[in-house]
Image (cartoon, rainbow, N blue to C red; front, side, top):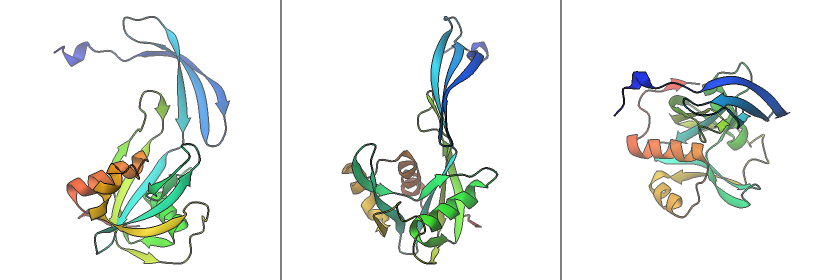
Length: 189
């Protein structure tokens, strides 16, 4: 195995925007990997996202059954969405849970930050897990969910096997909860 000190990052000579709007920015980056010719690499830049797995005292997770038009399919997802400029990620996760489901989480703990398509898409995802929630009323983001349910964690593996969980943030959060259990250290949101 080579010594890590011999490794070099790619050189970035510049970047130009091809398309830009509030949700997505497409750029061409002039890059030069070590020992290779320069070339332009497409990069998709998306907003930072916060996702939350809220678990109740009966080991059920708060989920939404929703339609996604891009893959033209229905599936189960955890609540989540874009972190607004200047907003704390945990506060964004709690806000998204309440807006999309009508439930206010009692606490959330950050469990992971990841990039779902590292190398081509810049899209930081921050994943939270929490315990307990209070029903505060109907969701305000009515287009988000076809159905809102507390799903037993015992059913999650079968849901994965049936392909009912497709979103990367949902999968990361639920796999973490299945592997490590409910978060024991929580902070109020």
